Image 1 (cartoon, rainbow, N blue to C red):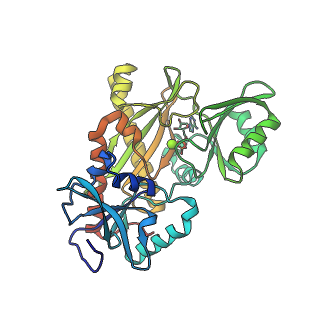
Image 2: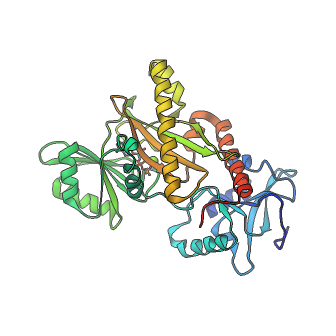
Length: 375
Ligand SMILES: Nc1ncnc2c1ncn2[C@@H]1O[C@H](COP(=O)(O)OP(=O)(O)O)[C@@H](O)[C@H]1O
Ligand SMILES: [Mg+2]
């Protein structure tokens, strides 16, 4: 298969992944989720290919990616023109920022479209955006932004007793520290960088720990919501929201995540379907559960539309929410590229496939509509 002036009636979709993910595809590692994306292509005429930054040849204006050969049932290398629609599954490594920018410029010049955002959402910016909406304001934990400002941490602890410190640009719980005041002079902190770490320290040492943890990165300090717990672990929710092939919003699932005992975060822990967890396990009354679901739908729709009004149209968002001990609903954060680990754990492979098929259908919708995000 060669690149060239080939024009396809249907959009050529490029799935941007890390070099490691591409390697494992070509080693034919089991990748049920990826294969679900390949529904439309067959044989030597694929609709869709995968590529990483390593595979882009800017001089020749082609990409040597990987595609799924359905007759052979295996992944092959192939050369492709630049895609008409791109689906970003992984981040570009920070040390390759320049090459990534170059790729985006190429895509822009070709008026390519994007299924989802190629950038992570800044937690502080998103907080400021949502705060402007009177309905959403009531669901936001109090938040301030800072860089190396010890006084702000003190005043937030005075007011709330426990807070979360989170890098503005972080994900998967790697840049999150929980701090609480355990007595007049002692503070407890915990984070999950390199396994669960906990400590009890005096104020000066806490300031040093925080500086060491965030270095020069900007971070927010946020009121800790008193999360519901289950089996001693914190509980929160991930609403997986997508636009479907008609461009309408769909709530694909609401996995409930239960973190490890004593852990400050729920990331990559156990997950359960919303209805099973609150209905069968916690015995919430059906009427309350129904109302809660409606409240979640209303909240995530509003968040989704506000995010789009600021950053442009997008095909999917993973929205983290939490219920506190009084069953009040809170917004925690918004993810532009969900790995959908919790969705798969809670709702199984079928839901995962459905979500990938939604992404594909939205890609086709975008190319029909001829409008989308600028790179
Ligand atoms: N304000 C908060 N109150 C209670 N728990 C929180 C708060 N902020 C974050 N968490 C917990 O930490 C986890 C990770 O924080 P999050 O903001 O989602 O950052 P990340 O981008 O790393 O996923 C959340 O899923 C939740 O379990
Ligand atoms: Mg999160």
